[in-house]
Image (tube, rainbow, N blue to C red; front, side):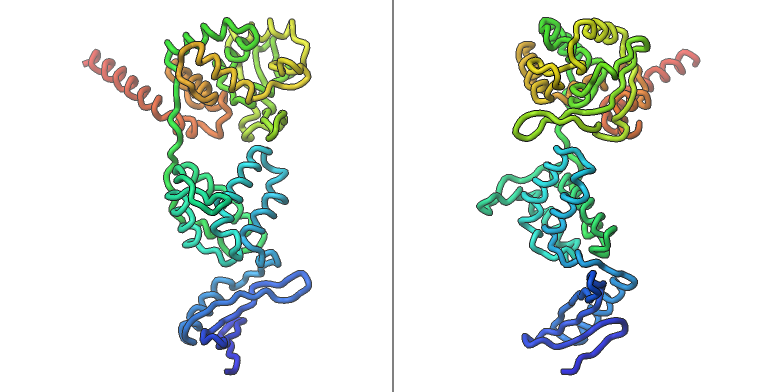
Length: 383
């Protein structure tokens, strides 16, 4: 059978297995050799339709040599060359776990240019129902909706980078249907619980300053552990949040940037917190406001702070909440006390006020009810 060319740069042939193959040039390697993409069909007519669609897809596209990588190879390359120096070590470790435990077992061996939206959707659905495949290729537990969303966000980012580097034409994660966010509920300490916790905290000479500062600022765990005395202006009572401490795998800590660009911020401390830090500074012998209890030249480990919080909660006979719930507790009580969302957003280091409002919808709903009651009473008095 003689080769036939459709309109555009294509090549058609009948294979020995009876199928028809169409091949087009979609780019060139560094040495100038062409990069091909093939489509297959049972009949020549069906193939010509597929081939013309493929030609339209790749029209004006010049893919690079990396387009021949498998998805697994691309993920490794993306993590090592792009993400290694742009995200925190803990975030990078999390991305590697997602790639190795969830994506590669399903699509890792497939050529990145051959991964379709249907392939990705099938993987999401499988993971949601069955969880990851372990080292013995046995099914684990089903994944939460928020976990599947996390996998999607990481893969979407990796595929966007592939489009930017002309490895693929379009991002196959676009058009997939992912579950809505289903995050763990926020555990907010009530005023009574907060008082019980503070009563226990005040009896701990080592940790009382730390937890009082946390409860009056709502800082992230890594942020409060990363504070230095140079960040504290005792005259103005302001605190600069410039860095964050993370726990390293295998022990130790790493000092890096804040979680987000907005995380680097300046906040006004309550007078009571200012006085506590002033007194602490007079007897301090470390550059860190909250240093490692046994190695003062090092910052406090976030893991150590977490474990101590659990112990203090147990002493106070309170639920075993997460450290981040202390941040939620601060934010919730701030809102109920009349702090507006925009101001609170700046204190917390959120990207914008709308994110703060979305995060604390449960509280803003209650505030709206109170506001409607106030307006109603006001109008009743007029009438």
